[in-house]
Length: 582
Image (tube, rainbow, N blue to C red; front, side, top):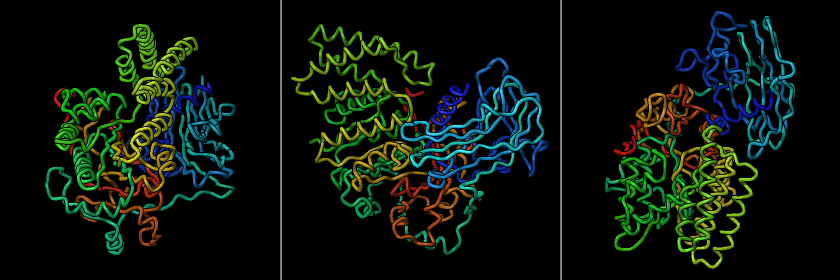
């Protein structure tokens, strides 16, 4: 059961991205309610077999406790959990005690307790305690329990919370954290900008007049020359995969960089071989751009905004090529297999081997649907795959496009080893570096989610920053209110965004009353201005991705560590899906 819980928590962390973010407030006493008034703010809660809610009747102190009750008694392997993230910079290398009060009623076939997990690189578990051997069972009045653990200096992620497995009812309240014997006091949140705050902050912003890429007047973007300097890799993030204004602004910046500063390679968070196919249209006008965009699998790119950018790139390449379209993701094997089939189409032996490889990969992908999308490969299957790939590697030695075919073999290997979000980010970084190394004189623009381009937490941007140093510049994106396209409980459609609330970065930035601007985090961090020091501290800011309907869209981190610059847009509207994207 303990091993299953470690796996269960790993899945939760990957699905809600808490491995990369820290709560802006810990809400250790559950006194703060979410937009969904049944749930506590700043905590991730699951699973669906349990009813989890705030209880104003039964509590240890204050207004609320957190209550868990088993809903589905037939699922004996599920756990009810609540999960938070602790700042590594505070806890790494320290002795930590995590205390909490728990009350139980008729708990059987399981237990209630606290849990704390410490991860190193690639999600290696460096420390873990879930009170499996001493959790509460049966009936207990309010009882204080404790976990003591020494946090490794090698920690890259620390998660904690409470767990309930089995039947019955459990209440949690009054959590506490002690670092080297001293109680951790939660920092007070900044909720309002004073007149002085606003004046100081305006020294670090660059207002932009529009996000429309076809406006024609780009004088406001001239500031980019100062911001990016001689850097050759510019990463443009997105806080949501479905914001029209963010997509348009990125298109506008890309057009400006390509036209004025010679950025000649575009690289998107799309599967590598399939993204490269779009270059056939970008450069030569070959193929249907809508079908080629759809060939990158995800609805996120099948939008009018991306199509408009692709059409501009095609026009920009006339009469001579000035920009290429590439991608760096590795979540699918199909495009890589097809590239190999095309290369060996005159070789019957190789074609038969690749067809057998394809058959095995289809079986693995089918099984992955029942393993949270992660491939599971049998020993005999792996031996057969290795033999085929080894044959292909030896066979391409004399091919003029040997490097490209070898990279497609790498994509297949990466797909087969994909076991976590951090592995994917490492592979995406490696694939992008392959593109850069094969185009040493080029300047490149990356298009990906904020969480991928950020320079922290073992994400893609972390690896790129380690390798490229000052040559890698990041622009995160966010917005204050509005809506966005996403997949959720209502299907693939428009979802209302949670408006920035007091304590969030967006709530504070909106007080400047500038609808669109660039915030110079790099300069703020370097100048150590006391009046803007709050921007270098832990802050909640928006994190959406491709899903909608999350009760809390805000998680926190030190944003000045994540990005060099942040582009703020007041209001978002949904990206416009192409007609075949529904």
